[in-house]
Structures are given as C-alpha cells and as structure tokens.
Length: 614
Image (cartoon, rainbow, N blue to C red; front, side, top):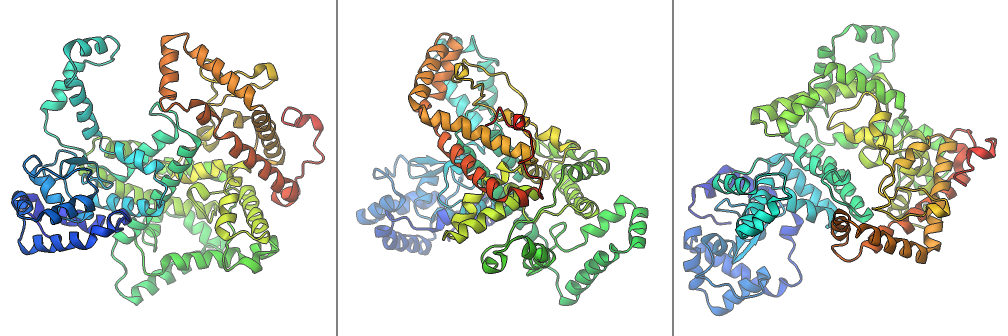
C-alpha cells in the first residue's frame, strides 16, 4: 500500500478504513475479466510504490507509463475506453494505481473517482468503524444475493443523494422549474440554493441508520412497491446485519486476559444459575434493585460485548445439553441427524413477551427518545450515551427472560413459537429422510415458521434493537386497509375479496390449531384459483390499467409501478410460491398437527369454523 501526501492520507480514519474494507470479498476477489491483466497491474502497482507516487504526482506517473501498461490498467479496472490523463482528476489518476480496497474519495465530494468514472463504493467512508466491520461481514455473508444490497448502497448517503437532486434541479431551465413548482411541496429554488451553497458534510452512518433504511424498505414506508423477491432479499440482509453487528460488538471489547479471570466469571455465572433454583434465592433477588441486577448481569460473559474465546460454542453446548432430553423424546430422528441438524427450541408466549416488554419500558422509559436523539442528528456524546444504555437494556432483558422463562434458541427471522418451531423441525427431518441435503431441508422448511404462527416471535426478536412494546399483539397487528380497486384487480364477482397489497387478512386467524389450518386452507383456495385462471387474472390486470388511466394520479401510479414494463408479471410473481408454501404447510399440518399442537387437534371442531377457508 502506498499513500499520497494529502493530510488525510496519513490519518487514522484512512488507515482504519483500508484495514476494514480489505476484508470485503468483493474487493479481494479477482474477477474473471481481470485475471488476464492481474500480473501486469501488480507490476505497475509495485513500480508506483517504488516511485513513491502521491495523489498529486499520479498523473505524471501515468504519463510515463508505456502504452501496454496503460492498457493493462484500463482493462484491469474494466474501463470501456482508455482514460485521458489530461482530463481526469488527481484522485481519478491515483485510484487507477491501487487495489480496490485502497481506492478513496480524496476530495470528499461523495464519489470515488477511478479514471474518469465517478463511483459509489460498497463501504461508505462516512460510516463508523464498528458499522463498517459489520457491513463488511454482512456483504460477505450475502454472497451473490445483490438485490437488497445494491439498492441500499445507493441510498445510504443521504447528503450525497440530496446534493445530486439539487444539482439535477439546478440544471433545469427556469420554466421547467416553474412548472414543477406548481405541484411541489417545497420551495425548489430555495432548496437548490441552500443545498449547493453549504459544504459537503455527510453525517456519520451508523448501524441504526442502516436498520432504519431496511425497515423502511420492508414496510414500504419510503413510498415504494417491493416485489416478494426483493422483500426476501431485504429480510435476508437484515438478518445477516443483525448477526454481524452482534459479532462485532462481542469482538470490540477486550478479551479476558487470564484463564483465572475467565474461570471466576464462569463460576460466578454458574453460582447465580444454581441460586435461582432455591426459593430463598428468588426471594433475595426480589429485594435487589433493578440497578443492582443490571450491574450483575452486565458483568456476565456475553453482556456489554464482554466475550472470551470459545464463548459462543460453549453457550451452544450448554443450550443443547439443556434441551437434548426434550429433542430425544420429541423427534424420533434426532439421534440419526444430530451431527448435521440441531432442532430449534422455543417456549415463547405472548404473555411472556408482554411481561418482559412492560418491565423493560418501566425501567427504561427514555430508551426510545434517546435512541431517536442519538441517530437523528445527535452528537457523538448522544450516541455513546445511548450505546451505554443499550447494554444496560440488554442486560436487564437477559434477566427478565430468565425471570419469565423465555427461551428461544434462534433469533431474528428464525425466531419461533413452540408450535412453529416443532413444525419446522418435523419438516426438516421429513426432508432429510427423503434424501435432501441439510441446506435444502432447512431452506424448504423456513416458510413454516410464519405459516404456523411464528411471525409474532420473529417481530419480538427483531424489535429488541428498537425497543420492545408492552403489547406485542397490538404492535404486530397489520393495519386494516379498505380494498382500493383502482390499484388492484377486482375478483369480487368470484367471491374473492382479497387485498393483494396488504397481509391484514392474517389478523383474522389465530395461532392455535384452528387458526393455522384456516389460514392454510384460505391460501390454498385463493392461490389455486389464481394459478388456474391466469387468463382471467391477466384480463383483470388489463382492466386495472384502464381504471388507473381514468385519472392523472392513477396514471402516474400505474406508470411508476410499470416503469420496467413488467407490472403484470411482478403482480403475479408470488402466486406460485405462496401456493407451494400453503400446500407444504398443509402436508406438515396433516401429518403432525397432533404433536405440533399438543393433541389440540382440529377433527372435533365444527365444520362451520372452517367453512369460509375451505
């Protein structure tokens, strides 16, 4: 690595940035189209190091290269045309000479220039180091799933995007801006003047900023329509980011320095667990203040980022030892596949979730306000204060989970209720018995976590970072929306009154045996009809376009939805998957309902309970 002579080139920020982003697979993997030019590039790179090239001398260095060396740089970088040294900037010249992870926005204008190209990098410079580390881990874990990451990368830097909009507006004619002003909700000229007159000072991007942007995409609160494939990719991204950030936080703290210290911590934790078994210990615990409880739990390994080598493996082993007798009794194939599959365990209930939420909010009434202050323009001190509170919040949450016996072996989008965890486990074993690989079996069973009522547990697990509600059912209930036939197909003449833009219909069904079966049968009936009547659906989609075009707003809405010319296919894209998921859920239900719902079978329920669904 070689550095230029600008002040920032020798700064800790730049060195830290390079040391973090060099672990991004995208930056370290040589693409196939680069491989023929890799050796020549490395030779130029070494030559530049020996010449002690700086940012302001990079163009002189490029001028002295042979034509073959320049072509090697062009091809290695994937530039369509040969770069014109006289017309590119010092930054653009310098970044041609370094590896992907060493490229940098030296003039701090929001883009990284490479030759004449202006690019947005996968890891923004204005991101705090811990978030950068988590983002690198996340992007690596996402692999070839670029759908969500490509969209999010473009939207991370709000200040840059704001300036781009202002620059675009400034290039319009006065008459064009005047026409636009007629329907604008802000003063366009004032926006241009204020935005472009101020220095480019992007705010620090934090972990919570990324989570908020992901949630906006998942909830469509940014005003956009998202396809099922995009939602799946975004959910995958959020799950990987939550895991990565937890790993980074655990790695951030200094590890215990001696085995004796580790032993003391472990013995202390073991003593606490043993004391919980006695009635006297419970009585004593009830006399402690919440502050004393938080201090005690925050000092435990795994809390506040305090970790030691092998801690996570040890915790997994402890959990397995605790639940293994249950697994052996419940699942006949447990022993056969235990080396490749550990079942999910959960004893989640709504009552437990609400009790935990109420006590957390009583102890931390300012949690939400401090979080908002820290990540909505707050100072570094605000962020540090909230982070400290967050670790207290996490410690008290751990205590409350023990107090109310809330035990879920998986979190995030794999969080489950007792029933959905059993449905998932039975399905995995069935697939393994049929010859599927463990990867195929777990992927196929994933949809059952929500089909069997696990969505509330998933929401409870994911809400932890933003603050738990006191009424999890109310917080997760999908708002009812009147069906707007100006924005979706009308099948009411076939007895189908379904809102395709909302999942509020799920509120109708409970998570008991009857509710789960009713929901499954409703989905099978609906999506079987849609798949078997594709011509009818296409006709109704054409009628939808006609209705939309009757008004200017409707036309704008439809054209925006159809900007890629595939509105009909996007609208129908989830039908087959949802049908398959429902059929699979019914297969597992029919085979294992007695065991999943603890013998609360549906056979004795009166037929009219399921009349509408079946």
